[in-house]
Length: 199
Image (cartoon, rainbow, N blue to C red; front, side, top):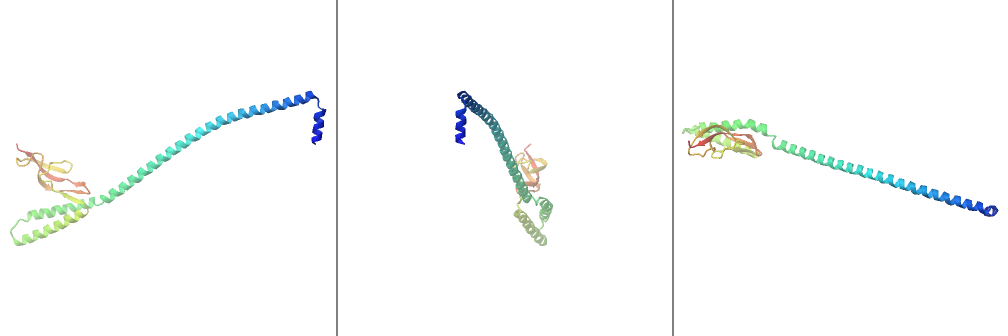
């Protein structure tokens, strides 16, 4: 076969060979130019596609970060709600028990007599009241008896204001009903009489 190709080339005239070589060179140049143009187009298209993919990846990462932050906030709020539910679950129950404490305190105040039977009864009521208050204290129920303190509208409920030169103005001079708090949250304000000071 190689011999046949040589014979064909030898039989061709020199002009034909030159034309054939020039056509081959021209075809090669056309292919190279087309390849360069295609590579330029491909590079631009690839850069555009890369930029779009990077934008999309950045948007997805931002969305993931926002979702994680939102989930963390939801988890934190749920934990706080559970903690509050545990801390203040006894609030209604405590409010129902406070009138019992008030009644025991009034019974002690009313039992002022020298009679031996009344003294024994008073001691029994005092012991019951102390046990009751200490039991409430175990569940973080604190009693507030603000005699002599400055009046605080967030903790006290003023029932009246009375002029009194012995007590500074806007100070509690008497407590009609003690206040209570559960885990440092006020559940009942103290009912107080406030001094106007000297007139």
